[in-house]
Image (cartoon, rainbow over all chains, first blue to last red; front, side, top):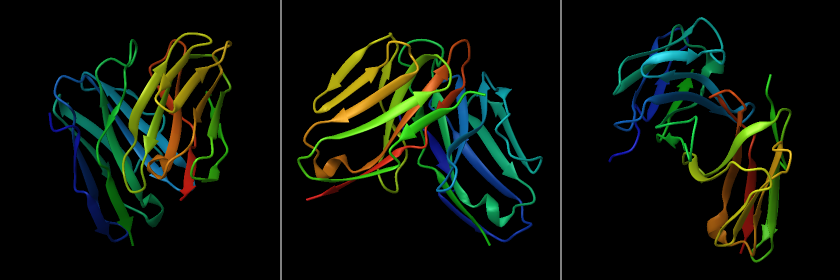
Amino acid sequence: DAGVIQSPRHEVTEMGQEVTLRCKPISGHDYLFWYRQTMMRGLELLIYFNNNVPIDDSGMPEDRFSAKMPNASFSTLKIQPSEPRDSAVYFCASSSLPGQGAAEQFFGPGTRLTVL
Amino acid sequence: GQQVMQIPQYQHVQEGEDFTTYCNSSTTLSNIQWYKQRPGGHPVFLIQLVKSGEVKKQKRLTFQFGEAKKNSSLHITATQTTDVGTYFCAGRDTGGFKTIFGAGTRLFVKA
């Protein structure tokens, strides 16, 4: 398996522009997580899905952020409009069964976002 | 809400010295996971602890879960330069599926 795939790996944009981050989870995993990592705030859970349904979006910072999972193999995180304080590394992770057993999360390589 | 505190924030050691990072939760955890993130990389799962008082070992790494299931530790014996990175604990609250990550401990190893 190729693991969790994220695109783009790097994104540089100007304030006010729309940014879309993409994630393909590991096949068969039914949980998908979006995280944001910064030096100041560490690794923050933004939202997670179970079977394509958003379960907890309490970590989404503002209405400018939205996430979708139209099918089991694809998810997007959109920021519109983007602001410089959104600059961070955004990770997508997937898991097969977080409630039981060794339900480890497999992280993608991340998207490094810079908003100028 | 649930909080997971991790100390220290940074640790500099000489190669061969031991290293320990500690994790404390404000609530009882159903389990705790440990991840390692190399500089410029992404978090990689190391281990999960589920039982009260559980101790697990992976070569030079020893993981402990407290009796009250509110704290955990990771101890590395005789550090090597390959141990460099940030170590995160991640706890899941009882009855929930959300996993909260600690702030991480960044380990520097001087050869």
